[in-house]
Image (tube, rainbow, N blue to C red; front, side, top):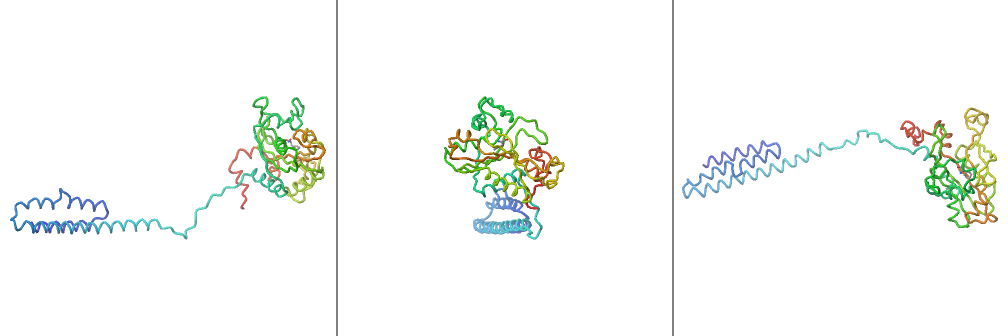
Length: 345
Ligand code: PHE
């Protein structure tokens, strides 16, 4: 019995030594120390032993079990350590390897133009104002000196939601709302970018939804020369110092007098080419002195206060600046188009 126990011990230690992972090691544990294992089996035969041999055998059996147990434990911690080391080795990072390139996004060309214009005006003391795209007929038209039935309403074909509510056709209602908020107290100096909607058929130069940027200044003693000076700074900063501007008489119900501003054509330097339709000039925006009716409707004393306003389309500006030939490129967001406006190259 003694030799059988020793034999089992050797066998077990050998198997422990050979175990290559925790699973195998556990199998050895179950096989040798488990209730159905050979050691238990041997001990069952103890009944046949003499009274003095029994305790000796018992002690020996315990010793064998202890040895096997210890050896199992040692091997277990070794295997565990090995596993951690293996994992560490497999997860090391070679910091000298070249990194995979990061795909960098960039601003949409329209966002860029809008932010550039905003920054320019913020630098001149303007605040950025916003208003709702779903607008009341009152702010979109009436408060801008376009009463119901006014023929000039037809200039801006509108999407009506109810009789009194529509999708704003321009950013000028933000003028009316801002003036009303100031309750007759100047100065007001705002720039308002935003989406506008018109019932147009989409083509290379028209879109049923587009952007506008509105500017409004109201204070005492504001004159047409303030407007001209402001537009001149704007044109030179956005299109280049060499650009000249000219103001042509025009008509908007909310401004009097009204003008349209052209810049000298960059392509031909004012000589005349296909881009400027041989005129040497390109139309950029509408503007004018705020109509006294508009001032009065918003609660301003038109004897004390005067102001100017202008409205422009960032799409048109972006098309001219970047040479884009179709307004729809800005909305279809073809990645090949957008990629050409990378700021960091
Ligand atoms: N709201 C006008 C338009 O959409 C543009 C404009 C704004 C003209 C402000 C004059 C003053 O056509």
